[in-house]
Image (cartoon, rainbow, N blue to C red):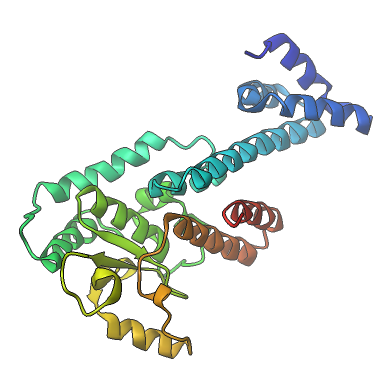
Length: 286
């Protein structure tokens, strides 16, 4: 438990002109972690001094960024089993006060609408056609083609609100819903694109890894085959490597979100955000 009197006394000293004293106070407050954020935010509202306001705002961001880094480390070193959790951690980088339950409820609502109409002995392609109908036609999701580089396209909370996203965010929501319905749809880390694969290891398929067909979540769930992937790689002058055809790990998907965000913020000239997102990416490469 933090002592409110001690915290408030320390916050008042944040405008000290002596750099050494300021840094000591800064480090002391930082050591308390997330518990002090509410005190800092309250002090920021009451502060009139611009230096103190700026220092409080920076401290809040530092603490919140530390929390995101710690959560990402825990998720990754714990096996990265829950894709939604990994995506939500990245979401909290930009939206630290994210209501995770709201996002979970939004995804559950779409899943429920599909489940009510799902015929489980239907063919895999029929199952996907039903998901496509509910996801794109009823709920209105689509690829953001007009503002593709917008970083908001990579944050699930924003994509669920606006119903517009990029290849990776739409594919994440689509695959999470499919897996909640016990339909084996997983992400495939294709260069310059991100697609989904319907995997059935119990069936004889022409593909390795039990892939029956591929799905383009960015293009209204369009179903296509291995030859289309071959052609795409040929256009990029890339060799047909196994990793471009088979499902990737959850950690690979979260790395891809981070790389998309780094590219988006580089475009906007946000050097600080690029540096911080590279720090997050580094966590997933150790």
